[in-house]
Image (cartoon, rainbow, N blue to C red; front, top):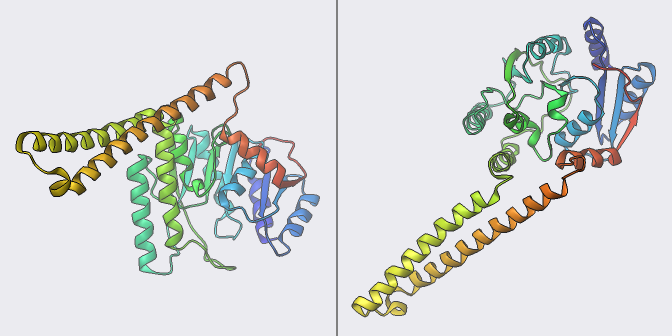
Length: 316
């Protein structure tokens, strides 16, 4: 209820219609009933209830699907994010930015190792994606709805939304925010939880650069591997013809290695061709029909999983 009171106070200071979507990610306590009580007395609040704990990405995607406003601001429900900062995010969006990240001025990591790992993770994400964000892990962010409504978000991709949106030519900035000390519960984001983010980062980079041209990726790797294998095989052949070398006796492992490289190269090129066929079929099937992508599938999935009370009627 404390979060509700602070959100309500902030919403009353915003000079535009607004709504608040509260996502219950399969809680096992009385949270859902409390949220439903809030929605029953305040029509500006909407509750989305996921039947089981699906993770932050699916929870955000469910909230994005329900939200009706032009601007969407996400924050955690543990009172570490101050709702009074919301107008500052709105100001930046009105200036023309598409994504505004909250950069935590003070961090609450329990150890030096945690701080070091966070700095390394932020540096790697910033270097690989080319998006100049200092704090990728902050859950306090603001987006234009037209941007996030079309993004496929799953796994740990909620941290990489700016990277996913980069191909749309978006403008990204950060504002400093203060994080309050955690009063309830314990954070589940340890060092090991950061490892899946890097795998998702590889997925994002692949989707950005090779989604519509898979042969460029698999074909390049296949040609490289095939060339190395053929070069080794040619060297072994010349050794046999010119010097009478007993290949199996003297270079048996090398011959097997060359054969494996040649087979792998051919398979990679074939995989790239199969990917090109899938991409071609995908785009040809979309001709003359309303486009559907991974985001549509995710939204449909959330509509099945989520029970919604008091759908919002205004824009915010």
